Amino acid sequence: MKLKNILLLLILAGATVYGGIKGYIHHQAGARLDELVRIAAPFVRIEYDGISSRLEGVLAVDGVRLSPTDGYDLVTLRRVEIEGDGLGFLFDLGEGFARQPPTRLKARLLGMEVPLAGTLRPSLGMAGEDAGCTLAGVLRHADLKALGHTLIDLDADAEYLLDTMAGELSLRLGYRMHGLQSLSAEILVGGVGELTALATSEVPEVRRVDIRYTLEPEYIKALIGHCAGQGGVAPQHFVNGLFQQESGHYLRTLGIVPGPGLMEALKELVTQGGEVRLRAEPAPGLKPQALQGYRPEDAVRMLGLSVSVNERPVTDLSYSHQGGGRGAAARAEAGAAPEEAARRPQRQYYAPVGLDQLERYLGR
Image 1 (spheres, helix red, strand yellow):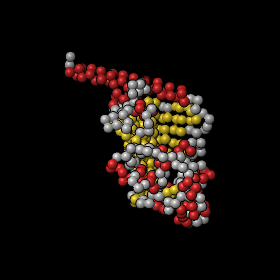
Image 2 (cartoon, rainbow, N blue to C red):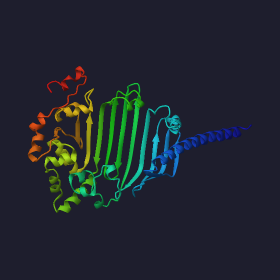
Image 3 (tube, rainbow, N blue to C red):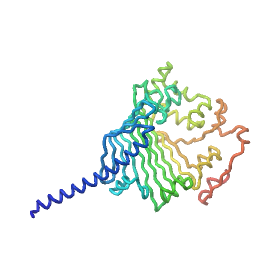
Image 4 (cartoon, rainbow, N blue to C red):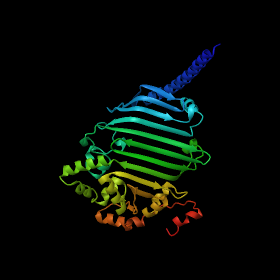
C-alpha cells in the first residue's frame, strides 16, 4: 500500500474518532440541557441555537434566550461556556458529574443583554426608577433611561479551583456591565477537603478576600451632570447634598453609617468614578456570626480589613450601625453608642487563638 494511502486512512480514522467523540459529547450535553429546559419550563422558557465544544475541555451553548413565563422580559446571551480540565471533564459533564464534582470549573456568560423596561432590574442589584437621583439611585443606576440606555449589556464569569492537598478552595467571580461598572472578587477558603463535604460541614474558614469594584468615570460624571441639571445646581453642589443627610438615611441606603474616612471615599467615587479595592485577611478561626458581637472598630481589625479608592488608602474605616439625626451620626463616627444599646445583652462567641494572633485580642 502506498504511503499516501496509509496517510489518508490515518486521517480518515482520526476524523472519524474525532467526529464520534464530538457527537457523543454533544448528544450527552444536549440531553442534559433539554432536561434542564423541561424542569425550568413552569418558570422560564429557555431556547438556544446550538452546542459546540473544544476537546481541551470547553463546552459552549450559543444563542441562548430566556423569558419568564409570568412576564415579558427577554434575556439573550450570545454564548454560555463551561470549562474544565480536558476531555475527561467533558465526558463527566455529559454524565452530570455522577462520581464527584470536578476540582476545577469555570463558567462564562458572554454578551448577556437584559432590558431595562422589564422586571429583572432588582436581580441585577439595580434600584427602581423611583429612586431617581438619591444616593441609592446614583449608586444603583436608577436613572439609566434618562441617559439613553435601554438595556444592560454584561459579561460575567465564575471559577473555582480545589487544592485537595492544601485543603483550600479558590473562588474567582466577576462581571462587567459595559459602560457602567465592573467587579472582580477572589476568595480563598480553607478547611475544604472535598466539594461534597461543603453541603454538610460547618461554614468553611475564609482566609483571604480581594474585591475590586470599578465605576466608569464617563458614566458617573454624565449621571451627576444629569441629576444636577434636574435640580438646577452645579454638579459639586449636588454631590455635597448627597453626603449631608441624616445618619438614618445612610443606614437605610448602605446598611451602615460611614465614618468620616469612608464617607470621603464614597464621595470621591461618586464625584469622579474609579476603582475601590477591599482586602481582608480574617483572623484564624473567626466565625462570621461572631462579628455581631464585636464593636465596629474591633470587627475591622479582626477582619484584617483594608480599603483604597483609586489606589489611595482609606485610613479611617470607622462606621456605626446606629441611626438617628446628624448629631447621632457624629457620635457614631466618634465610636460612641447610646446607653440603651450599651445595656443590651450581647451573645458571646469563643474561638481558638494562636499565640501569634494574641495581639489582635488582648485588651479588647
